[in-house]
Amino acid sequence: MRAYYRFPLLFLLPSLVGFLAFNLGPILASLLLSFISYDGLRPLTLATFRENWVGLENYRRLLEDPVFHKAFINTLFYVGVAVPLEILVALLLALGLNRPLPGVRLLRTLYLLPTVTSVVAVGLLWRWVLNPTVGPVNLSLRWVGERIQGVYGLLGITPPPWVGWLAKEGPGWLSDPAWAMWGVILASVWAGVGLRMLIFLAGLQNINKEYLEAASLDGANSLQRFAYVVLPLLSPTVFLNTLLAMIGGFQMFGLVYTMTGGGPLDSTNVLMLYLYRKAFGVFPFEMGYASAIAWVLFLILFALTYLQWTLRKRWVVEEV
Amino acid sequence: MRLLGRLWDYFVYLVLLAGGLSMLVPFFWMVSTSLKAPGAVFDLPVEVWPKELHWENYQRVLTSVPFGRWYLNSLGVALGLTFLNLTSGAMAGYAFARFRFRGQGALFLLFLATLMIPVHVLIIPLFILMRNLGWVDTFYALILPGLFDAFAIFLMRQHFLHLPKELEEAAIMDGASPWQVYWKVALPLATPALATLGTFTFLAGWNSFLWPLIVTHSLEMRPLTVGLAVFQGQFSTEWTVLMAGLTLGTIPPILVFLLAQRYFIQGLTLGSLKG
Image (cartoon, each protein chain N blue to C red):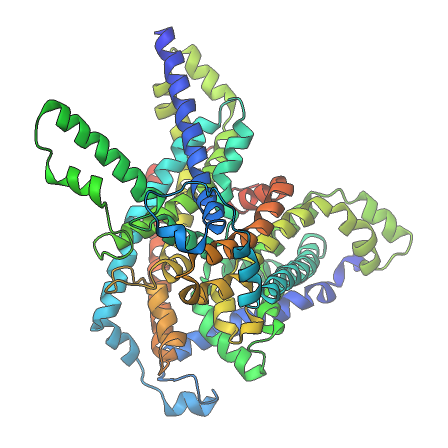
């Protein structure tokens, strides 16, 4: 019997080949690429590495590249706004949808529909939904603006300028540099909130009902039960969900590619888009430079994950 | 107090309902636009649902770009990735769950560690590799990198670990080879896990964008996502045609999701919560 369990190679072979060729190999190559200047056109051999070695030059260039700075800040802004928003809305949704409401399964499904739709469809669709003149978002905003205007009219006061602006035009979502990132954030929260909600829902259902019953017997109201029982027990899920959302947020690409292409005026340019442009988008390709961007991005993610992991002890309650 | 609680419950329910319906608005807008007369989309006041249905938008998207070909490419890539991922993932998962060999723990950890490596680190050297192999613009480049997937291995290993060993041991007593045991006994028992992983991979494959964008260059080799994204410039003056294309492209993933919702959800939550 023991001898039987000793022949794993056949079973491991496909994954091992894939791991070495498409994972470990490329990772090492990527690190080396970030130290050379490479246009992607010449064949890549060992000699290429020797002849085009620039050391840390690519990384030094990043420090003084204004577009990189812009993309870096935009990425931080996107993650800083979209992730908390997504997590908060998803948590509230999960709390609501965790109860035995009529049609609750159907409701959950509705929230999940955007999750299974491709980013390309979401991006192109939202470009249209956010169209400033005929898109449903601005149509609704204009409708609201007109009502507010009406109320002011009834009272006989001149409304403040923003009311008139809302009733007449509304935000120029993807064409106005001040609004473009907000448009992207709106679409991304719409698309991502279902998945986060689902993970919270799974976390909520893992909570032992006895704790809640005990708290009820002790006279805790629903708000107290949430604050002192549900939230602490859910904290590992909150931790993981936030971490995953952040990692995903830093790698955001498809939405900006389809919604704005990084514009207007680089106002929605993010790190992944910049990387893509440098390596594959704009001639001459700078694959070494783009690889340096990739590694900076990786280091940010790694540091963030490490930081979260360390801080976790402060606020995540581990069930024993 | 009682009454206030009831009112609050109704209020929450209304908000959830309104939120759920608002998830549908963009989809509704997509379908509605796809049926409008091409010139009428910018007319004010806006027609919420067109009075006359212009089905010719669908005809136009099918004829003005290689839409059918893109569709088949997407299907091929999604199915190919699913097949490859299930095959290699289940085999490796079985090896980690059932066999004992030197360096097993270290290898498994190494595999899991790749989950930490974001795709963007891989794409540039992977593209160079594909070009050196002459695989750019072929299905090889689109599908073969799916040969290794740590998540698939992890999921399948978990599943095999939870299977009772007795049936497999009985087969071994009867003189079955490891491959026969795996193929005839263990794998059929793993059908739910395979369905979970399959649904998940199919959807990810159908919706994938960055890698196919990089590794396909010709019109004929684009999957639907890339085809539509790259051609949006040409379409964008014709929102009706673009929306017809999007509607057609959104049907398969939503259909697969609705049919295999249970498996899709398992795949997602298993990946993020300790099972």
